[in-house]
Image (cartoon, rainbow, N blue to C red; front, side):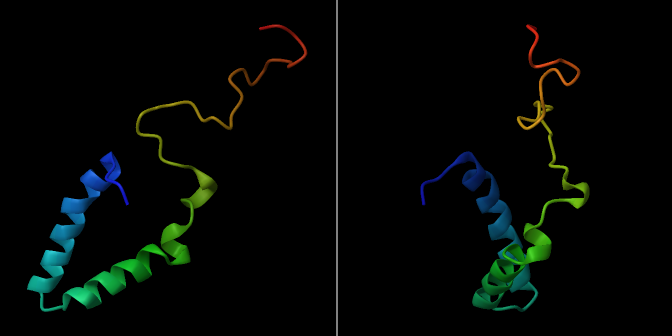
Length: 76
C-alpha cells in the first residue's frame, strides 16, 4: 500500500504503541492481532454517537445543502 499523509502520521504512533506493549511483556504478534481485532470491531468502526463526524478543519458537510432555506426552484 502506498504511503499517504495518514500513513506517515499513524506509523510512528502505532510503532510506539507496539513498542510500549512489548516493553510491558506482550509479544509483538499478539499486540498486532489485538490491534487488528479492535480496529475491525463494530464498536470501534461505528460512527460516533449521533452520526456526527469530526470536522477539525471546519469544512462544510457535503451532504448538507449550502443554502438550507433556499427554494431549489428559485435562483440564488
